[in-house]
Each structure stands twice: as structure tokens, then as C-alpha cells.
Image (cartoon, rainbow, N blue to C red):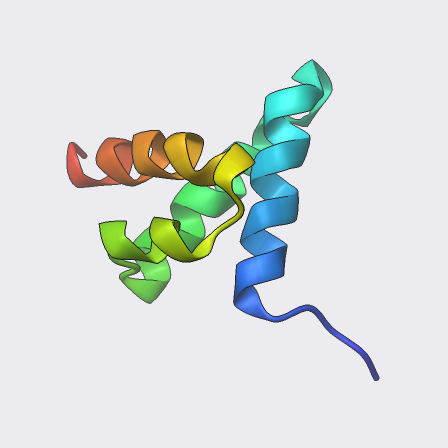
Amino acid sequence: MRWLSLKPLIELKIASGMTSPGRLKDLADVQELIRILDLSADFGAQLQPFVQEKYGELWSGVQNR
């Protein structure tokens, strides 16, 4: 069985949510992963530059809950 590791999964979900208005659930999925796995803001620095800023926004949104 094959699966994605966390980093590419988050990158794909953020990119999908950013580029396809019908895929907003992907952004919500990332917020849930941030919350459940207690991911740090610094995790975003490991991601592709295209999604780093959006990761920061999603991370901040989780902290404000």
C-alpha cells in the first residue's frame, strides 16, 4: 500500500484549496490536521513557497479558536 507523507499531503491540500474554489474543504482539512497533530507555525517553513503563506493563515485561524 502506498500513501503520502504529511508534508506533501498538506502541500497538495493547500494548493488545491487555493486554486479551486470548490475545494475549500481541503483547507479545512489542513486546519484539522494542524489542530489534531498540534503542528507548529514553523512547520510551514518546510513547505513549498507557494503554500507557505496560506499555511500560516490556516495555522493562525486554528490558534484563534
